[in-house]
Image (cartoon, rainbow, N blue to C red; front, side, top):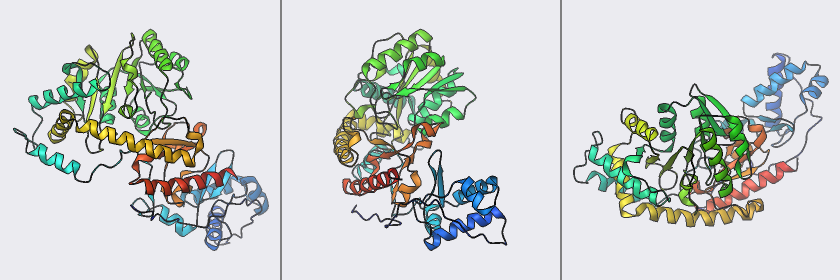
Length: 453
């Protein structure tokens, strides 16, 4: 892919507007008239992208309106994707009204590079298709039916072989294969008697959605630069906690071994079940937290979807005792199990070593892309190479989209987004380093310009 991404508004002018006084149409309600005036001013260029609007109180005083009317008008303008408000910083113009209309339907716009979703670096275009073709032709394969006991056992054996590469010596009967990491977490929460759950204060949207969709008490676990604070886990007193200590999503950080040990010690004392989400673990040269000796109860979730191919919906839950037995007996009576065809592909790829080859290639490419990112964002130097980066900025995600790059805003990663303002950029989602270079350049320009406001 060549650098063919274009700016939606190439000549963005960043300035502060504190004395703009609109003219309101007399035929509309006051709040709609003000929203229309904002749209008209943007359309004519009187207001430009990045301009800061007057405060609610100031414009209410100038126009003789109630502050509540201005608040309602600004809310209406925000719904039209014209402006964006930030607590403590003010309200800013996003773009022209026509541009805003485009923004509302730009999901398929080729001028916007989508780096908002974490996905592995794309493999050779025909590799997955050839794998599926071989799986269909495998002896005894009934890809239209249910998974046979033999296929399930083969996948468990392959799972044991896979977990060994992560430093975990597991017996096949201790492994439960499921259709992806999200399905694994959903199965754990759905089957086990978990009434209270600890989740990282900054975590990925899938965990937040799972927690919100269940009738259980959910507590945010406070974090610092080294991960979840042990005291926070102690104070939470929860039945279980979902932790992502390796290439954490969204920060890309790797928690220290000391922090991991401290968290396991706390969990052992409190009886908290530690659910380690190792979605990106194989991309880093570090053993999982679960592999450390401890007295804590643990479940380990490892997936191929985030490190090999999204369509390879394969994950393994590993644990011991009654916990894993309960999960194992429940999985195949639900929709969490895998389709036979994908099971066969996973078995073949693990047994043949294709998975390891793909991961090695991913690691090399991610290292190169991370170096590219540090050239634009020096503050990332010293961080481990990660498929995603998190930038601290108050610039809203909509501004990056107007610049031709879709990113994930901090509101997707926290139930209290104001505390961790920023964006996550998926480096591995770019189709090439050339495209990533262009996208990172634009992101850097947006963050610098917004910081000057």
